[in-house]
Length: 606
Image (cartoon, rainbow, N blue to C red; front, side, top):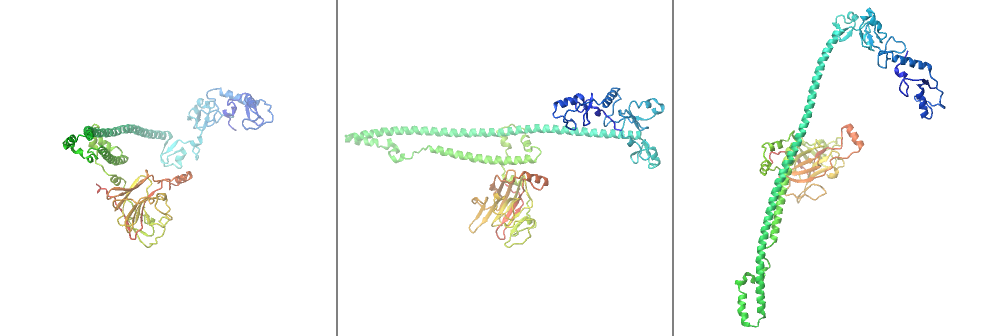
């Protein structure tokens, strides 16, 4: 018999217990007012539950039998606190017939659950009072030994399982068993200890969380403080430079004023001399007009006397005056040139120092350089800046110290005309083909090139190659995606960034980009350093002996764009991505030429 529950007496429209329940032709029950109102607002007429449509609105009659059941249900709902129908998931009374009330207790002796009314004999009869009552449970079958049909009253400590008294005579005859209550107390004690341990772990981890959060806050405050102090240091540097610039401007202005004073004095002198010349010229013109020969001869001697005219009697002496204003302009141009040269040197020094400082900060956990600067706690003065200003170190030294990698050549990626030494550090060219087998299309087919074993897809790396033993060679980096069977000219468009040496009968030529003119170098490099900054997209070549930059590629497109489908496949496989690796590449064209990967030795740098 199905157990009726409260949900079966609720209208699906108002969700309350039925009032005047009526049935539709399809067999569903509703409150009369609810279904009437529903049909009044809907067209066509249909059942709210099964959506069955009716040609015309049915004549509804109250279901008297169902109404009586609802009324009986309502009466049972209000009979008392314990007279409640069992809901789904609750333990029903095993004695109730028809509608099942909610059980209040379960008897472990009777193996039955009782509602409040049917529990009354256990509270009244003396023999039933001795039965053990517990809160209602639905899994009574789990409390009974399936073999002996007896309640579990003991716990076997050897097999760690609940047993009945009959089990002690059969399977557990030699085992030690204790009452369930005793075993339960032991388990509770263990749970108490375990709970205490878990609570201690919670407290420890909570303290760790608080410490980490506090450390983050402290780190944030310290970072903000360091940023402010860094700004203060640089502001002090800017103020010092501005002060020096002001002194230089003042010096230039003083020199200009001195030149102006000298020019004014010279102009005054020239004006006086011009006035004197005009006077003499006027006297000479008057003398030319006289008809008195005696007066002309007597006056001529005084007008043409050197004592009065000095060196001005020679007109040719006035074509180039002894003072020229453009001398000041030449001095200014010289000063500007000196300033530009000095500022350029300072900029280079600052750039090198900042590069090294940023690299050190990136590798360290704290700002050690900043701590050294503030160790003395000296004020931000010009003397302080001069004291902490270290002697400049070139950029190549920083690269050699921080970015050098060990490059080993891959013999399986070498062209058949090249042979790689056992240690992977040397490669030689042979005129005749060596006929090595081509493995997995890894070898260069038409160009005498060889790759390094390891590639790089991030960061910076640097290696050095000795090229003195070759007449025609290529070195640099290449993308891993380059087609090695049809690879042509080593150009950036083909995924290759190289430096090339070409020796002819007349001279040696050095090329960066193949589409640009030859590089004009004061001397041919013996060892070339190759530096790559993947993030900035830069490839640079250095003369290791002279410590000078030979050639640089900037704005290099190392990364490749991919379609969304390719990106998804790459992320699923984990084998490829949008950042291809760059491999060191060496190439030789001359008979019996050799290139060698040399170890980076920065301790000899000066």
